[in-house]
Image (cartoon, rainbow over all chains, first blue to last red; front, side):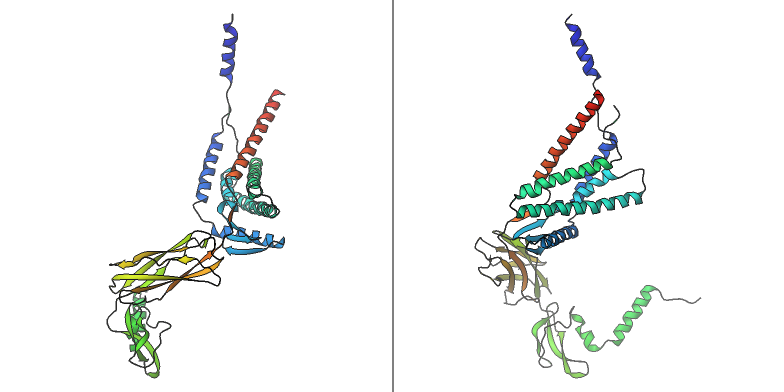
Length: 173
Length: 227
């Protein structure tokens, strides 16, 4: 008599199947890791220079004392800032390529889309870096101003990728 | 059928034409890779050039240039003299606080130069105190190039500025390198660096937000399934 409910419970558990990520998502995720690793194989000096130059100009226009120290280093309000690869968002952009690529569209259309995304990412990155600068100048700790804000920026990119996706996250159950 | 000259043939003809119109003086200077080095001084024909070494260690003699008696040039003559050049790699890192910057000194021998080369280093700048640099260890050339390490160190009391570090060298006979003293620059700054972008906390923040977003997505899916 007492064994029947137990048997019923075992049957219910057997019926449960957890959703699995789709093969396409796993493949694209692998490419994301590969693309990000490849990104860090190059110095991206020109992009670090352009990013630091943009921050320098924007900060200067906001009334901060600025000076260039080297191709990737700037001095703002007496503090030295070195622009590293992660600061340029190029790793985020490169990692986004496999998630943005639409296999049903042509190479040119995908290329044009990626170009537009690159411009958007560059602009978003400048905005978050400049907000970090302003917050830091107003006494907010660098961890909060740059790091936490950076985490929010990464999440915003994820939401953008999620809305733009052409792939299925989960496989057929 | 008319034959047209091929590329290599044309190149040979061009070379022959250049040799034909060259003056004997020009040919005489071909023993050096740089026949007329800038900065050489000639006072009278037959005198040694100043500085005496021309090109890859050969001695220079002042001579008249072609038919013009008033024009002197430094022509390399005689047997090659063993000599050397020194090169200095850029000081790394270019900015130091309370640490050291290093550079590699390379002695490049010419014409069979061998022996010990001693180095001295000096630091110059507009502000004081300047960073210190100990004399690099001697390098001994036995065949190929030899190297030594230059170290420049700064302390908390070192002034903030950009300094020029100059390395002089002399061999066992007191001869300096053909290319003279070499310099590199290093900057001192006591302001702390801040690296922009990325970082562990940014990644953790992203992961935390992603986890919250995933939970919300699952909750919405469950609610829709219950309806």
